[in-house]
Image 1 (cartoon, rainbow over the protein chains, first blue to last red):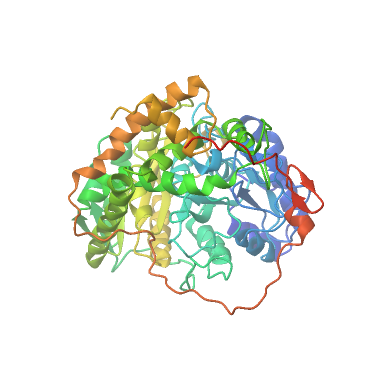
Image 2 (cartoon, rainbow over the protein chains, first blue to last red):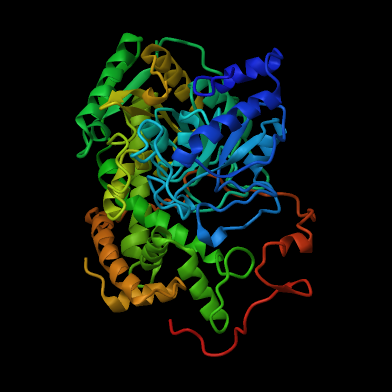
Length: 467
Length: 100
């Protein structure tokens, strides 16, 4: 009997290699778990017909283009869209022999922090189904936490991998900008979007990152990446851990979250790390504002392609222009509309310099502050999300309150830096996520620190009510 | 920062969104609140700071200028709502332009 709740991808690989389990048996075990629990959790938007590989199965967020498999990005405007080519990450996963289990739920166009913006209904948190799994990659995170996939891929623009991983008590990596190809990914904000793994352990995360990372001739914004090292060390000797004051003391951080993170910082010391305080004064104060100008500006441009001509929904209404406007009004949900309009406003004549131009300068300030911090530290530590998983509906009517969910994940995203979430404890019975941020291309450092902490913390990633 | 109804309508037109009256009211309020929050960036004096448009220092990413395989026509058209004789088909585009 395969316990999908407990089994790591690495262990699953071992079972397959030793012939103790057949690829079909493994795939069937996850399909059985989906049958059992996905009616309640709604992690998946669509399921694959059968296994198309001999390896450990995988789930892909529905913004990842998959040839011959519907890819909706959680939007009505793309319902029924079946890509005629694979995204590079989907192709790499296929080449590695990882069969697709299905496509996971997401906030529409990856815009959101709870999956409540999905046109196909929200996903639910496996720790407490009355609460959100985070977002936008809540479907992938909840699927891994609930044993409905051994691992999954998500995408992250301002926190969409790290924040749901935090709220679901699992591991999530937003890689350095440019390490993973964006070719074939439904675009949201192109200077920020990154694909990355969602897994149960840091070693699984490194294994999956190894599959997807590397330069891609189809995406000229990709870069050569250092070889991935599987972490093994269980101490933190020689590692300099910085504690940015503003990321740890920001308004809105729940006391239970703060306590769990503080305990983990103490643990870093006990494991031999050198721990010191640092400061990112303007990155946290101005990061959210900077993000909510730049990301919507890029979104307003990227989402211009949904015009009812080449793919997706078409709603006829008189001539061409009427068709385009009606298609977009009926096809997009509220959040994409808000962001498209915000972006169009920030880019429009008379406002460009004060909003978009100024935000691009703030982005330079954020990158400089982080660069300075990394002269003294190898890794920066903080909570990932100010809160644990919140109840469904709690922030759905208040866009600004929802945006604050990403307060602590956004600054490093603006600077193109890698960030890893690992669970570091419970608060009120719900997982607390720890964020580790490194310099560009320092994924191996994040894996090392994350792995050592994971071993020492012994966090049980199986949701209590499912044990 | 208050945003007028006329401004919301203007932005909706720029974005090719045919919003309903109810949407114009609702989004107007929400955009005003969001603009208040993001307007914070103007507090900083960044006269001498260079803008960042991209997080990596990549420049001049070339490939050989040789033809590469591309999507066959029928595949490129496979998801189109309407096609005719190997082309995307759209309603008449000539006529009065939308007022921008």
